[in-house]
Every structure is written in C-alpha cells, then in structure tokens.
Image (tube, rainbow, N blue to C red; front, side):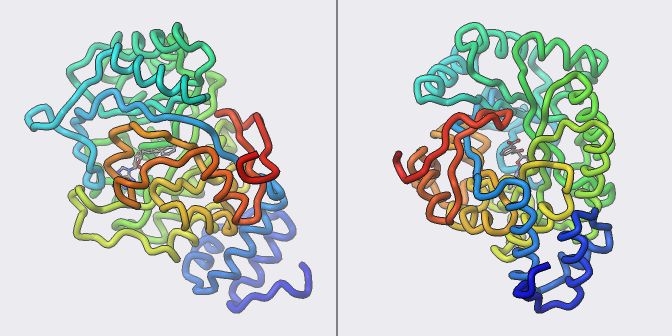
Length: 374
Ligand code: V47
C-alpha cells in the first residue's frame, strides 16, 4: 500500500491490506466497514478497487423503461407503484401502447428497453410473450431486459410451467437478459416484514441461477435504507457473491436507495447521503466477483450519483428519457428532473473526472466521449 494512503479508522487497516492484496473480505470485514465513520477511508478503498477493475471508464447506456401493468397482488410495504384489482388507478397497457413506447425509444436512439411490472393475476401468459415478440419483430436491434426473478417465479407458478420452460418461452419470444429488481433484502426476518407475499430470497437466487444456466445475463439489487440492519446488508452481499460463484451471470449490482413517499413506510426518513455512499463503497469491496456497480441516479439524485463514482461505482445507468410509471413513482429530484440526456450524463461523468463510455446492455463499449458533447 502506498505511504500516503491515510486511514483515520485503525480498524480499516487490516481490511485495506486485504483489498490491496486482492483477497476476499469476510462478513466481519463487511460489518467493520459499515460501522466505521471513516467515510473517506472506505471510499478510498472502494475507489482503489474500482480503478483496478475499470480505470477511469464510467459506463452508461441509452434506455427506456416500460411498465406494462401496475396491478400487483404482492402488497410490498416499500412500493408506491402497485395497485390491487379492488382499487382505483390501475392500468394494463395494450400491446399497441407498449409498441408505441418501444417505437419512441427506438427513435430516440435507445439500445435497451427495461421491462418490469406488477404480478397481475388477470392476464394470460400469452400477454407477455406477445409483448416481447411484437417488439422483437418491429425493433430487432432493441435489447429487451425484461422481468425480475420475482416475475419469473410468479409466471412459473401461476401459469403452471417449470422454471426452465418459463425462461425458454420468454427467451424465444425475445427476452435477452433480466434486470436485478425484486431482490430487496434476502434476510428472512426482514423480508417477511416488508414483502411477505413475495418470492423469498433463496428462491430469487435459485431463479437467477437458472436464468444464468440458460445462458442469459442478469443484474442484482438491494433495497436499503428502510428497516433492514447492517447485518442484513452484509448477509445480502455475501449470498449474492456465493450465487455468483455458482452461476456467474450477474453483470452489475445496483444498490437502490429507499424512497419513502407514497409507500406504507412513508414515516421512515430513507437513507442519508453518507449512508448511500457507504452502501455503494461496501458493495464494491464485498462483491469481488461482480464486475459493475451502478449509481442509479433516479434514486440517488444526479449529484449524489456523480459523487458515488468516487466511492466505487462505475456505471451511471441510462438516459431513461421519460416514461416508466414505476420510475415516476420515486423520482427523488421531483417531476422537473426526471430525465437525463446523453449530453447531461456525459457532462456529469466528465465533471467527476471520469471517462464516459456509452455501452450496450452487455457492457460492450459503443462509444467513448473524450469531451462533453463530443
Ligand atoms: O424491485 C420499489 C425497488 C426495484 C421502491 O437491473 C424501490 O439495471 C426505492 O430493480 N424506493 C425496481 N426503491 C427497480 C430495479 C432497477 C432499477 C434500475 C436498474 C435496474 C437494472 C434495476 O425498485 C424494485 C424495488 O427493489 N423499489 N419501491 C422505493 N419506494
């Protein structure tokens, strides 16, 4: 370690030695990192690891969200998006409406459509396959990052198919990869309190393993800053790391900052900026076998997401040019700042001292930007 690497918290010194030596960190190390108030020290370690892996490259893509339905039976306490069939305000997009979103996305230069929705018990399975195949037919180059492990689990059980059959039929229709949602917090006691009707943590991991075995990539997330403990967070990271050892298909990890308004947990404050930076940094340090850590600006806000690039994050998510009712339900910076243009993302990354790289969903570089607006 270089002589000028200064740590306030002496408890971090042995961890720093392990990071420099490229050794795996333990559960205890994860707890020490979360409990430490040496934010700069934790950030420097995560930044060291980030630069070893990616140098100054910071990835983003041009994408758009499509949320086909908000009807959902799961009743998750942290969710401000879902509606029950007995309530007002529900919608299900027709295939034509979804195709219109895909068309707009394509015209705006999107390379990816991120498709997730509620667990709707009043749709046939053909709704989803028709949705995918319709978009695939009209826009064959648009990558369809569709359905969380929770949705796949629901499809398999509700439509009485094996997991393998579910994945295969969706893949045949056009599913190219899967987003990382629905992971929330794996720890059973906490998960039971915030999303009791949802796929449990082990099943989420099992389904991810099956998607990987089918040859598709997925992402992974954690929802933090609600009622979870620090132990729950470290447990979550370690379970993901172990699953990655088994199946190897996670591309990117996205810590999702809990946004309380409009949810059944609206009385909670949500995570502080300091906590969010620590969450990003500890994720980078613990997940030594997942390549990318995303600073999701929609939940963090653009300025904190920009700062997070110095705390281990190397991905800024996408331009997300409007749309996506799920995302609209938790825009931290208000309705006037719910989109980011390519120029703005390039500027935010450049200002932070990093090199913007536009990528496709599978992290193949499409273009590097040496200067803003170039
Ligand atoms: O699963 C729900 C979370 C997830 C709230 O894979 C909330 O590239 C904060 O997974 N406050 C969906 N978070 C979003 C998601 C995602 C986002 C961006 C990129 C990718 C990717 C995946 O959002 C849900 C849940 O964990 N969520 N409600 C809330 N109130």
